[in-house]
View 1 (tube, rainbow, N blue to C red):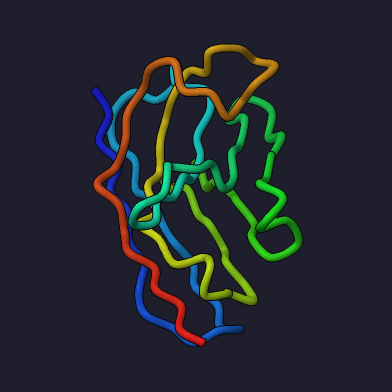
View 2: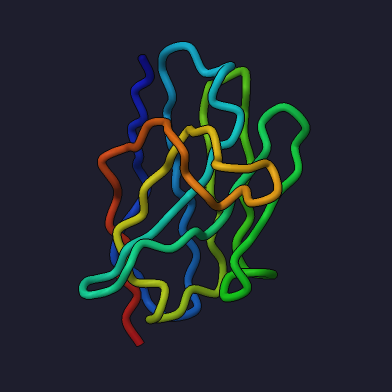
Length: 125
């Protein structure tokens, strides 16, 4: 059983930065992908950034490439999302996940795993 607890969200201005954290407790080895997903009101959930925990490969949505960075600190059992140059369209509830994908060829797919409760990010222009 895993528990994921996000923190670091808030209300910021366009162009500002935030760092989200996801504290992980429990046995994680079998959940070999971790990532950040977001959902804005009235929109479907979308993947933001994913990391293959066993090798370190990272994947980003086109909309955040060059602005967001996903990282993990295994000594602290924490996943991070550094978000720079924030835009109003980044406004959403951000959730972290630890999961097994449907296929290793599609790291964005969620077959089974765990979700955190989320942290709200609001960016105003």
